[in-house]
Image (tube, rainbow, N blue to C red; front, side, top):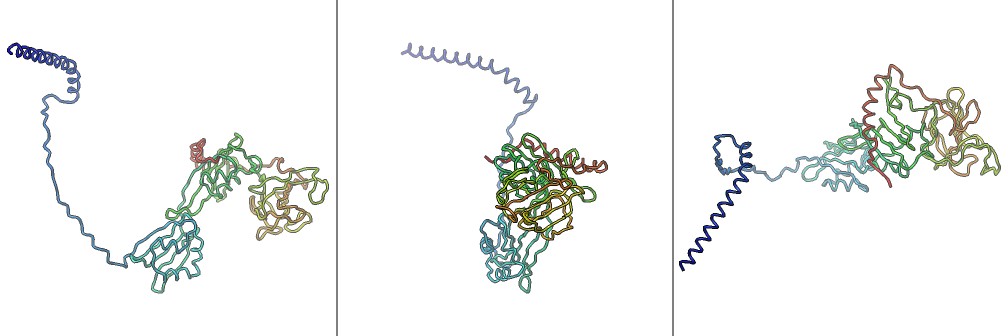
Length: 438
């Protein structure tokens, strides 16, 4: 028994000695690092104490909210217009419970705006707690339609409003058409048409557009109380067509005359547009020998035919004076315009003329002068366009067009002040495709 106890005691002493040795080794290894940490973390003679923690509980008295018992108290509510909405469905979602008021407002002559509800805009109403209609407002174009309750019922009016102008930017890549690319970039058709019009003297959008072409655009948007009312003018744009970059900037001088220029100040407008129709296809080109589909004979075709639906707008390609507007033989309805002294352009087979257009009328480049039709010797709706120099027919797709005047020296400082920030915006967007259509 004594021997067994001695053996156990010896084992315990060995374990204790081994443990102490192990602790000394660990301490020797760790102590230098502990010392470094202490040197950076604790100042000499610092007394380390745990701060006293005191739990404080304070009673907070909540305000007492009285039950709502004033049915005449008024509230403004707003509801976005969705596709298919009617005034009745909107007012129901706005919790308007006032059949007499609704009938009175809808029965007024000015209430036609309420039957032209635009998805994406909003209808705002002011009502009492129990749903009585006090006021109704709807932005119709640039006009604000309002109905205000008074002692005689409702005062209904429609007045112009002050719009907030903002500048927005977008870019896209052509996959099938310009309109498809601008749709993918959430741009309106109005912006797409402006892009095509701005670059129409350098790019023929009927035959020059290629898959992979890119565009960037800086443009105006007008708002009222956060609602988009309309898009405005394109302020700057870049179009890369078949690897070549075309840039344009809108500049308006002190006299109020505006136009589009390159960033260096050259006028991008030629004296003549390349095409009198914004979007179409060439169905028959300029030729000295073409088989006439109506006359069934070979004869010269001294113009270019653009196939387009009946009613498509036809634009005059340059500033000028109308020499003829009426019916003329195989041309059907024809408009002839003289430009400067030696240039004339003819527009045939029209379905109708622009309102007020007559012989002697002055027209500016891109003005609408008529509409595509099939009058005269035509098998289908198209525009027959002729370009003449000193009354000699020229191919409008090949003739070299004179350019319009550039920015003058006295306008250059003001122009540069506008051009430099726009150039930075275009550079920022260049190469960034915010929309693609595959």
